[in-house]
Image (cartoon, rainbow, N blue to C red; front, side, top):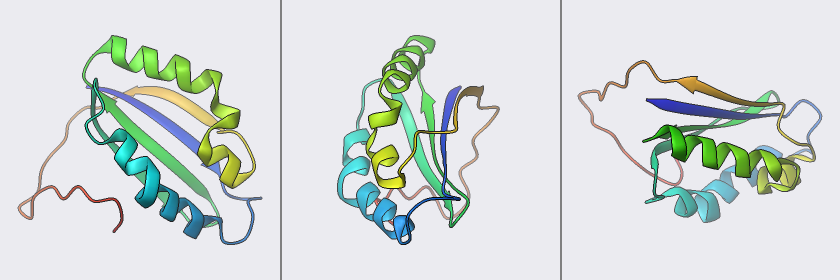
Length: 112
């Protein structure tokens, strides 16, 4: 599978940005990516005071390349960049080796 990682540093971000990012994901971003053509799934990850990340998994090389090109072109103006106050420090394609669904099942939700 075809992955793409986008990561921002939170080291010098404004106080309270973690809560703002979580609200943005729950209120806006989750809906934007739910059902997106060419996307298998997206996860949002964060370590408070360290980094915020989007991990995308695409169905085709073309879908990943198209999204990566468009995102990279506007990365500095992306909603995450505006909340954090800086552009991503990493935009990196990768290969997803495997995905396992645990006994408890997969739970898609805008906020945990």
